[in-house]
Image 1 (cartoon, protein in one colour):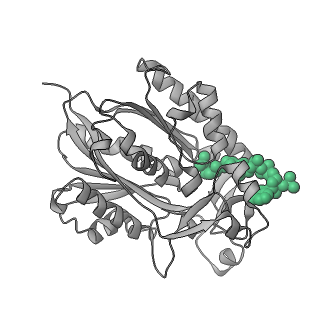
Image 2 (cartoon, protein in one colour):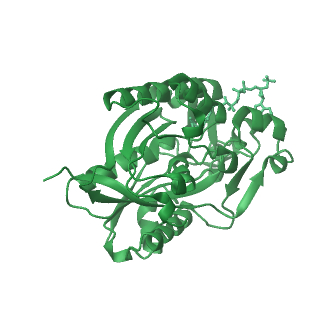
Image 3 (cartoon, rainbow, N blue to C red):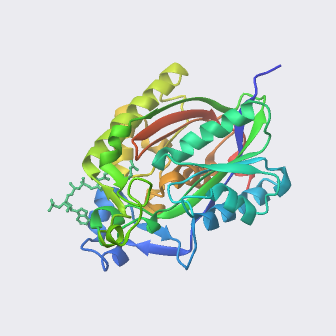
Length: 336
Ligand code: ACO
């Protein structure tokens, strides 16, 4: 019998309606469109507005869209894995809140917290659950409402992030497609460069932590930039080499959308042409766990069955990795 792999058989994205432009940000903090565009490549980002609208709102919409698109009955989904650092609450899991909202009655689920690498880690776990033979329909989601932990008085972070969500369906296949290889890493010493001070068990919320703005992302951008470039370049090269891929045979590189200069530098260091690199950062900014599935969603119509694709990410933790897959269907045959 041929080897069973997990293949992505559908992708769907959800972006909140409100669009925050660089010009609007320039009315909030001391910045301008020119600085943001040249330093980050970002023009707009989507923001989830409204009282008590958590990440699960976006996840539920993405799941509903994915079910419709893949013609899947809600009761057939067995597992939902949601990568996020901005779940509705510390507990319960956003995966299960969203599954309930989307009408999934037979699934179990859990969240994965690996910051910008979350979708990559979650996709790997989902693939193993399918390869194990027990699960036939697994939904993997990357979603973040970054606006809930961003300090809109801090110009060094508020221009970078946005809200958004993407979801993929994983199913078993015995064809020569699906998820083939991965290599992931973590280095907890990276915590000091990108973190939230308070709100967890180490420093629970108090009036003082709120007054000190300790529930917002703190980042030292330069070391993060350097580590992101080094980490993603290294792991992409390793995964390519051991799978016999070169710059001609690899069809697409899908990098985490953190900063256009990080993406361009990786493409240069790997010597991989930019026209085969998925880029949508100008529209959405950095949606943390959302960037990779949102790229697949935006580029789906250009993907062909059998395309060799490497996804790579780097994020808070530090966490990073790369995953190699063969695309399982002609994207032009399905509507967005
Ligand atoms: N508008 C105008 N000026 C700004 C802004 C802004 N929004 N933000 C910072 N500046 C100023 C700084 O104050 C500084 O001024 P100074 O020279 O007078 O002190 C100047 O611009 C340069 O600041 P740097 O921090 O050196 O700018 P840099 O070129 O490093 O760009 C950035 C900053 C965009 C954060 C960059 O370091 C970066 O992208 N790092 C990666 C961070 C990242 O992507 N994190 C996301 C999570 S992890 C991940 O996804 C990989």
